[in-house]
Length: 432
Ligand code: NDP
Image (cartoon, rainbow, N blue to C red; front, side):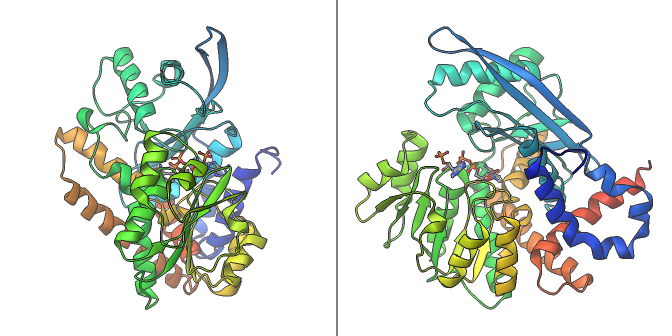
């Protein structure tokens, strides 16, 4: 707190984490002796840079760019880039910190990083997005590389932005090796990467329900967000027999009793880049409301927050519990506030934390890196099957770690412990 007094999101992520790993520290004094916690909470490198770009009126605009390379103990840095006006050092550090343990949980050899800019892509033309991405990459390319740091997408960064970033990287570095993941299929992208985080969330949820003698079929789900994670979570949930009755964006949400029409949602959000109000106008039976989905007291069985950090307060969590929710799995990063998590735990909900439940995106990103190194492209079925296996393994690793430290069915603590011990052991083995 003293060192980073103005970084509330970073502090929240670190405190949530530290609160759950105390039993490990008590049993392993070597971690304390080697100052593992001090080293883990300080990024190995934090880069901040200027991004100047020209808008369509010919004016020069200036944004702030970031890349925080948090920890490379188990492999090259890996983590997304976020473009959103709220981006600052605190948000990028919280995301980078979480990424370290998420990447460790996947079982794949990747360290943790995150980056982005306070640039707001909303309302910008394609040409403006391209000029911004090109300028961003002119600086970022100094710090990344296929064996050093491989960024991907996050909020505001999808296939279009990755394409512009990758194109500029190649012009500057004369290399076509996969230095970014989430690329288009015609130039090195992996099948199933677009779907990976949402599909992976559902594979994790299915496993958590199965472990608790429940199934997804017939359940009513609340999903927030209408971006990459939310869309493919909704699609997979409906394929598995559940009904998803909501989707949202930062202005409002839709309730649709018969279930969200995924094809229509994709058309409005991915192609037209429209709002949820446009979806409601186009989808019969969809009711549009302004404000937060989590304020709607709608009866549901499962909640999947897939929009952004701190979207569910303690009070809103209680509303979900009162509405009959029995499980929460996080598609977004840190969407539940500490008060919300406390409410879930007090009510005995099944709770799948972000670093475990949404790890499918980065897992398939690593599979994309591996395909690029081999210069081969795996089929959708192969990647999807690997994704499912990884998500099931993450759930069971978390259960086993919680059990090993006498923490019962605390999947949050289990995920933190399993992610942490692998990284800490690698740091110990590599010396001071
Ligand atoms: P997108 O940009 O595709 O979509 C984000 C969605 O969330 C949009 O519907 C957006 O609405 C909404 N949203 C963003 N900020 C807010 C806010 N402050 N309040 C309410 N709604 C908001 O991003 P992704 O789907 O990729 O990412 C969503 C979450 O998932 C993030 O937390 C991200 O870190 C996490 N994540 C993403 C992964 C990926 O592979 N993409 C991997 C793992 C985690 P609007 O359009 O109005 O802004």
